Amino acid sequence: MSLRTTPVPPSRTRIWAWAYPSVAIVFLTLDAFWLTWAADRLYRPALGHLLAPGFELVPTVLFYLLYVAGMVHFAIAPAVVAGRVAVAARSGAFLGLLAYATYDLTNQATLSGWPWAVTLADLCWGTVATGVSSAVSAWWVLRRSARHAAR
Image 1 (cartoon, rainbow, N blue to C red):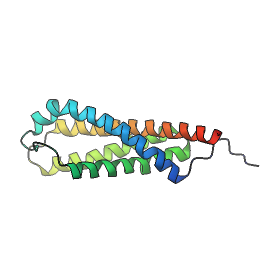
Image 2 (image 1 turned 30 degrees about the vertical axis):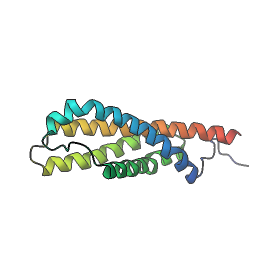
Image 3 (image 1 turned 90 degrees about the horizontal axis):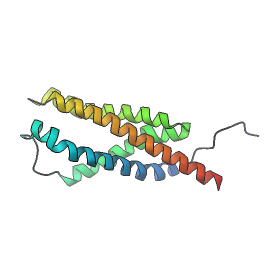
Image 4 (image 1 turned 180 degrees about the horizontal axis):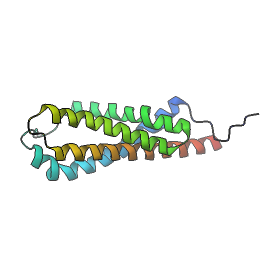
């Protein structure tokens, strides 16, 4: 007889199958809104001399594929196993801070004239967007898992 009071979490494969597309949709939607809003208000005025006229598709796709995998691995899967959305929110926020800090603080340290306003805005954005996306996805996976287990 088991004394476990919480449902058994889904398998690792099922977590990935449910979490990857859900967090990709949430994060890509949030990031599209952010980039649309911030492009002319923040990035172009501060970094216009560095910006390419368009973006390169391959590095963009690779970034999103890898970053979404990082959210699943480091934030969502541990949260689903623990059965706690707050784990995804905290771990996702920390992952976002680390990832965006890696990019922006490296630029701050190595590029002449990299603006602090961009660094601070990106750190805030990466923290919030990754935390929220991870939490929403973990919530959805836990909800779906509960429904699946009830069948």
